[in-house]
Image (cartoon, rainbow, N blue to C red; front, side, top):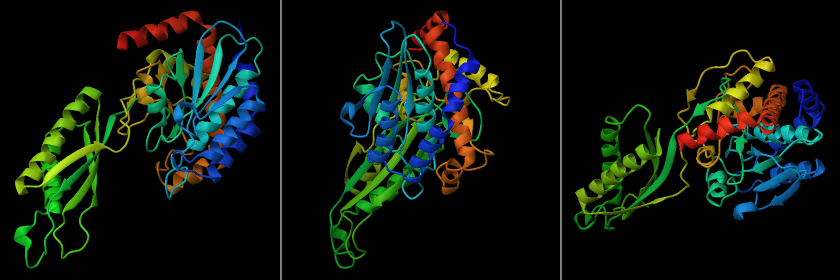
Length: 388
């Protein structure tokens, strides 16, 4: 099937008012992870209007959805992923309103192509900022029958191939024994001291870690009142490393620090994961190269080589199941810092709308390439199999 790139771009341009509308509606009504009922309603309603069959609440997640367009043709199945959760006190400071608008805009354009081979899916994935909806959906098999997955993310640079760090979120609970802090301190076991010892140990550990490893944390509980020896203290940490195997080793070292800190004063310590773990992002280079070529067709000249981001994304878990890319495109002048109100403001501006349209074009063109080029798809799959 021959599909002209100009035709795809024309279809996206026709949908420009809808892409702007969706980006604005979600941007002006920010919702936290797993509470994105308004955003999910806007997106699923639009998908139904475009002829997609929609399944809401997939994977046991109330605000997750799968919108599918298949016309009975045998062929590949490609998914565009949508994110739409916001940040507390900031709003859409990560531009998820643009991610969602671009993915559904691209899908709507593809729905208007006659005889498009294969299946186009939009997967609505909630709570990327916290508990990682993609992790749950990947574990429950929602990506298993796909041939490729892609999305875009607003940022400060144009980069098609991105690596990210694996992430574990750990909570350590130290338990000691309460006592009067002035008259019977010798009878207590100070759980807060154990936490402080823990952080001293972590600072020493950090000096021995590779450059791409990260340990950051806070004390969430440290006692009730100064005149009672704290019998309970709690710390929460994010651990990051370039590879899951490296992170597993780091986690054991951190647990050892916690146990040593507790043992110094006779306290007890337990730990748990307070959020789902993210794997590192393994971008499919072949798929990323096609995305780059489509960006250049669209007039994007400055595209940097593969980049390692020091953050973590739940798309990493998806990339271990199916060939995937998570490219970044410049929002505005690229100077706004993510996770800030300034970034949220730009994401709601005319510049944000233009970026969503550009991203929708690049995504739609890449999906067409995957669906219509058998040799390309085989190359994508060979690379994925070799990497896993």
